Each structure stands twice: as structure tokens, then as C-alpha cells.
Image (cartoon, rainbow, N blue to C red; front, side, top):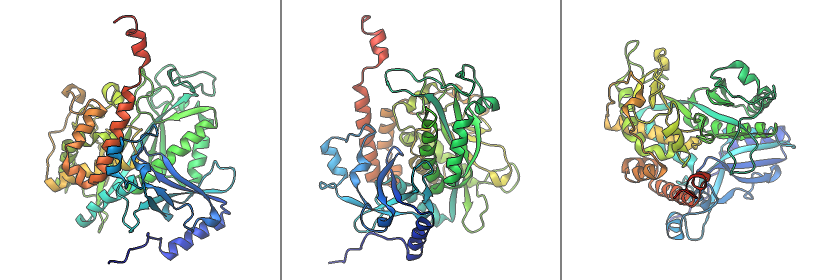
Length: 462
């Protein structure tokens, strides 16, 4: 009988370095974070003195088969995805992710953890494991993806009654926005107290936030991250959402990453700029031999996005609300067209110097799990490279005139994903089954809700 491997531990140098980091900052508590399917933080808070012990370093694997409402798929499905005993996963801290929790009253650290099985394998239901699995596909090809996410979000008034529509908050002037304020500096300055606190939090957490702009919606903002490897960018988006919500809450408003929070306002996206560099030379492999040209690899990558994004859309638009953005958003993509500096396309190729050659994928909503959104879009591009796919001609018109080429609802997107074996193989068959089961359970719960529209227009008229 083969001897069982124990759950993996960090190398001694990393582990001792992590302990030193906690000690130097007089940390009293550690938040052990695990991103769940929605991209929210699960985990445990443990005393810093006990951080290196087994106490607090396990979680049940069932957290990855839990809906956003806290429910589970039917037992018949649930127990095909997790063990009947709902056994524990082993958590291992990633030392590169340790950061302060700047809003905590006492010195507190937060550390993102990876999840492993009892025999030391990465747990295939964990979103961070899924992204790592996809990134490993590029290693034998001598390539490394580089990404730069742009995350849009709204500031809204506190809303404790879910039956009431959301409203823009008042700024420093005491008045809420009523007109479109795209790229307005003064409109951003209306929320200086909140944004100053957000930047303080980001500085304390060493997040690589770059530019901040005002988007077209009322109190809608966009934060851009500097380009880097995909795992670190997913980690930073995950941490930024926590920090932004906390900064807003401390000023009496909400920060929401809902894809379409208000019917008369545009939706919020998470655009993902992506390129590919050589692991040997660092050269951008999407650039062509001459200025203004693109490599054949870039064309294959675009071809993969065009073919597979419709089948991967459930990861980029993961909630029923996501499709309100795609259907009714003013510049949200409705098809898989691509074009040069064309913001109406799902894939925009910015005009830039050769070393910055990239494609901006505009499909994901700000409600997407950053790990899964990046894993999905990179998997689509990888399949294009492996299958040597080629894209259509670039679109130079308003791409919305081409018509719909994407699933129109979460139900349609899940059906498309279920029928795509190549994506399931790359992302992990059990993970894809679990994801579909969770999202179908959420969709069923949504259909049980009777909306105010139905009460207003159907109650006495049908």
C-alpha cells in the first residue's frame, strides 16, 4: 500500500519569512482567506500565535458547491460533486499574498490560501486552483499570459429594503448626480473622502492600482490595475473589492459590483487586457515582425476567443443580472466581433506600440469572479492557439449592428458550457459540473421570485 502524502507545507524559508512578517508588524489575528465561486472571501480568523498550527487551516469542500443564497444543489447532484462525509480541504497560505487589513481595529493580516486534498493535490473545485491549472498549460509552450484588469463599479445610497430601486448617493455638494459625467474630474472629486480612504487602504495593502476615472453612469467609477501575471491580478481584484466596499461603508454608502444595478444606468464591466510574453526573452509574442502587424499567434488567440467565448460566457457573466448588462448596456458587447480601437466590439485591439500589443476582452461583468473570468478567457485563447483558429476580418462599424451572437440568459449560457468538452477538460470536468449545478440552483431560486413589475402590470390586467 502506497504511503499517503501529508498535506503540503510551505518551504521552511517561506514559512519562517511569513512568521517574521507577522511578528514585525505585531499582528494579533490572521484572516485565512479562500475565494469562493462568487469571488467572495471564505475562511477563518485565527490568533497569530496559532497561525502555523493545524488549528484553522482546514475548511469543508462543500463551500465550493454553495449558491450565492447559501443553498446547495439537490442532494442527488451535491453528493456526486463532494464526498458523502463533506470532508475537509487542507489550506496552505501563499506568502506572496500576505497583507495588512487596514480597516481592522487591531493589527490584522489577511492571507489568501490555496486548497489541497488530503493526499496533497490542488483541490479542483477551488477557483484559484482552476486559474493555476489554466496557466500551467502555457508553460510547456514557453509562454506567460500578462493581464491588466479594469473594474467598474457604482457608489449608491444605503439600501436596506431590496424592494426599493438603488439611487445615486449625494457627493460633497450634497446633491446626487443627474447628468452623464464621463471622465469628469469634478464628478470624481465629489467623492474624494471615500476615494481618499480607498487609496489609503490600497496603499496599505500594496495593491497595484493605476488610474481612476469617472464612467458614464451616475456615481459610476472605474479603477485600472497595472499589467502583470494573471494570478496576482486576480488576487488584487479580489482584495480590492473588499477594500472598496469597506471604504464606501465607512462613509455611509455602498460600493456595488453588480453588473446592472440600475435600470436607467449603464452596466459595470471588468475588462481584461491580455497579451502573451516569452518566458525566455520577455518579448511580446502578439507583436508582428513589423510595426502595425500582429503575429500569427495573436490571430490564433483571437480566433479562440471568437469560437469559445459564447461557451465560456457563464464564467464571464455568472449571474441572472449579468445578462441585463449584456442585453441593455449601452456599449456592452452582444457578439464576438473584434476591431481596432472599437469599443462596440467584444474584443478591442488598442492602437499602441508593438511591445504593448494586446486584446481587451470586454465580455466580463464586474460581478464575475476574477479567477474564473481570467481562467475562462485564457482557456479560450489557448484553445485557439492549439487548434490554430483564425478570426474574422476586423469590424470597423458599430458591432451591435451585426446582431446577437452570445447567449441571452444564464440558462442559455449554462447549456452552452455544458456542451463544450474542450473547455471542461481545460478547467477541470468536476469543477465545471459543480459550477453548472450551483448556477442552475441559483437560477431556479431566481425564478421563484415574483418581481414588482409583475405585481404592477399583471396583477389586475391579466
